[in-house]
Image (tube, rainbow, N blue to C red; front, side, top):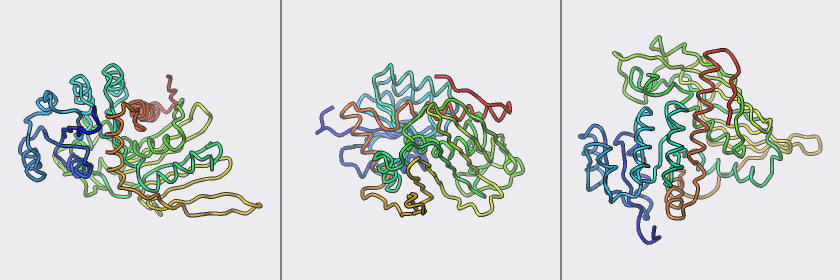
Length: 355
């Protein structure tokens, strides 16, 4: 693709996350958004009118058949990620796919294989990698400040935040799970990225549903459907062991009696030479100097917003045929871990991950 020619991007999904992507890519001059689609046509028409998008497609399939598009963003409920991503790749489109990659690792594997066979780019939309603070943390890791990272603790504990009770969010066949696959996948992805992408080899985990089945702990995100049902977890915890011997400890919840929890995402990296931690918008470096503990604040890096930087990276990878940092393999790896946690919780046993 010529560097003078804008990337022609179609948006699949006119909901809240679709709007975020439209607002983001409108800030990138190298991108033109000529088309939008949603399974609910009035929503697509309203969003197109709001942002001056020329063409509205009645179905995602119709949009994918549009030969004028180079790439698509897929921002729809989890159950549609695999079929739409696979279809988009087969139609010769590059894909920016919202998390999680899919509702289970088997369908995620099909996306991964299709991306490899198609020669087209598939990038996961994990914007947390691109935040100003996380970029500063990653810079320190890459400089060797921590030495060898041997243990990581990560999580996102919400006390009252079940989204859209009774909607697709809380139905396992449509979402794939609860907070583990919703916000836990963000923390897994960010932690593995900061660790240097070691391979997970075994998992021991447990999930719990103590609030959702009782219609307690509902949050403000999503639209509740009290005629629906809830068959996912509201808390998950796990230990993941890596091929290099490092361990990753995870805890996530939508609702919990979590006294003292800050209700913000956190990652704590423990290395042989130093440690780094991020909690919300605060970063900290810890070292031992002359047998004394020294803590130093980590300053965020300058630059554009996380989503704009992610969008620019997507465009750069399309134009240069470069592998994205949040590649199809990272999405598949995340799904493998998620499935292993659910399986371990179901059986009560450690689950091995074979590659």
